[in-house]
Image (cartoon, rainbow, N blue to C red; front, side, top):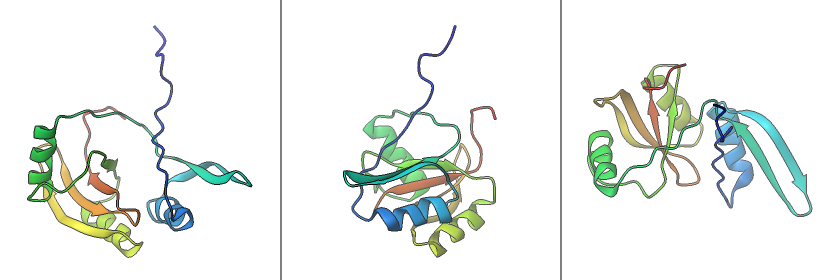
Length: 134
């Protein structure tokens, strides 16, 4: 049976588009899939590889924040990026590129993780392993 959904795309409306293009494309390393500059507005689609939608309740969100950060700090949306390099290296790279540290790398029951905040305020968990197959 063919899957009905072929792609998940998360769309962020931001005030500082050029800064965030630089952060997500140049620092994080997401490849440009499509970019447009029009009188009606500007935008970019960045390829983030495999996508999944994780739905959790507030109690579990609080548990994740407690494990990864030490207290409840994330909002209703948080990105999680699986990285191929060591968590400490990826974290430092993103901080050097404009992110701020929310929590130092740690080991969670599911993976090595760290938490940063992107220049747009989005919290991002960096993680090393996934239950999804490659």
